[in-house]
Length: 121
Image 1 (cartoon, rainbow, N blue to C red):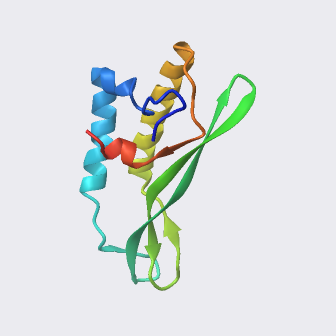
Image 2 (image 1 turned 120 degrees about the vertical axis):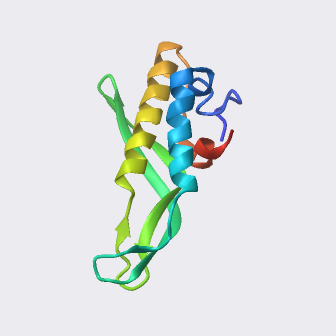
């Protein structure tokens, strides 16, 4: 997904060694996802994709970055929905860093991005 200026969300991070490492960590976690995870009810969970809202502040303004097509686990029986805390911890670090860089460069911060931006090389 690109911003109004045609720049992908993680363009700044992809230009920095630390940023590439952050994005690669998320990419590796997604590639190694297993679907044979059991729910607390005992049935198997499956991966599904939905929108994940990342809330952040700029000064006193509260904002939301909607991450489209984010992976979650959902139980086939009880429909419990779970997010991978390690994955989303790393996702948050990458998003926070990109927002920080964009604010310093006075670049636009979009209202949404696609999770596939982590997967793209």
